[in-house]
Structure formats: C-alpha cells, structure tokens
Length: 136
Image: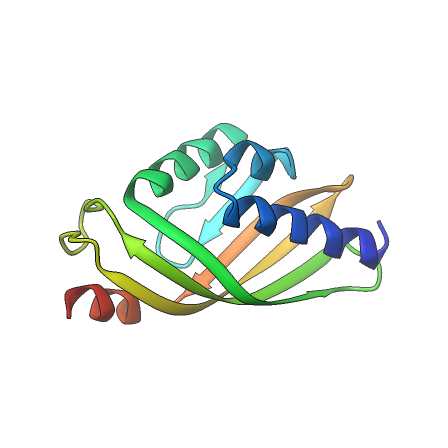
C-alpha cells in the first residue's frame, strides 16, 4: 500500500475518533487488530476493540489536535503524534474519581497496516501526567 494511502487511512481513523464514530474507526481495522496501550493488556480482535471504544465513550470525551502523521515508503508502518484534550466523565476502576475534570496530554501511536487496513495500534501517553491532572 503506498504511503499516501496509509496516511489517508490513519487520517480517516482519527477523523472518526474525533467525530465520536466508533463504527467508522472499526471499518479501518483488520478483523485481528492488535491494540496495545502502554498501561494495559493487549486487546486482540475487532470485538475487543469495540468494547474498548464503548468503555472510552462512557468514561471519557476526547478530541485530538496538532496531529502529525508519518509513514514508511511502503506504507506498512505509520506513526502519529498528537495532543489529547479530554474530559473525565465517569470513574474508571482503579483510577481517580471522575468529577468532569479536563486534561491535556501529549500522546502518540504506532501502526502496522495490512491489506489496506490497520492491523496493529500501539498507543503511548504518560499515565502519571494524566493522574496528576485529574487529581489536582
């Protein structure tokens, strides 16, 4: 897949994220998507990813800005850097109590692409910074 198509795919994925459209996000993924976050167990499969999206939609409202996208020449790997602007809506088990706190957090993600769809997403953010912000 050419670089331009990979970048367009990643852009569609994040446009769907910002629109709060999990079905459009899922349409960008392979059936065996591997979703990794820096503070948690990997999720494998679209069903697990859909569960994650549902949970996130209840507990958080987030918008991503300042998006920078990069891709390898062959389009099999990509990266994104962005700023998360969020509101903590409902307490997530094991995390501080939600009271509608807002946060701004730099984050990034790495992608693998196969057959025109995203097959792996690895997301990184500073959980300690997030906890500090919502605990203040």
